[in-house]
Figure 1 (cartoon, rainbow, N blue to C red):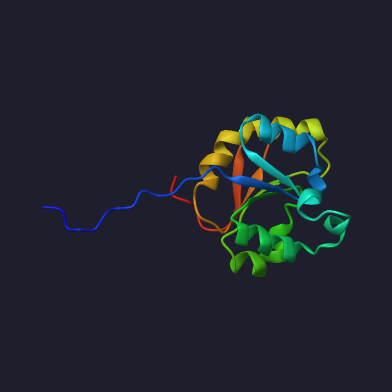
Figure 2: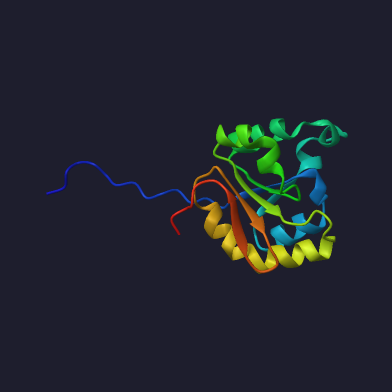
Length: 145
């Protein structure tokens, strides 16, 4: 006989990707959209040049509140903003080389996209570094994969 309590299935909505200012507006966003996902370049979220003025902790807190998955070229986000990350459930994926070209970033994104989706389905906070052909947990608990 049922206990009257219903077991809820976990909610796995499609992640919305927030792109830090260093990733530009088009190339990475277009690659994400081509895979059927929503991409929000920082300049679209903070228009009129506000994207260049907003402090990292401010966009990080908003991305957390909105439930967005953050992509950035700033893999030092852990060193610089560990306290902010620790107060959030933010899921961050950072390229491990700020000097990558747009096409190189797209290539790494496409190579690792399924891995990113798998890890993004887990709650944060955490920061993964996007390598050439792998993801490395840089900060946060080891997710149950």
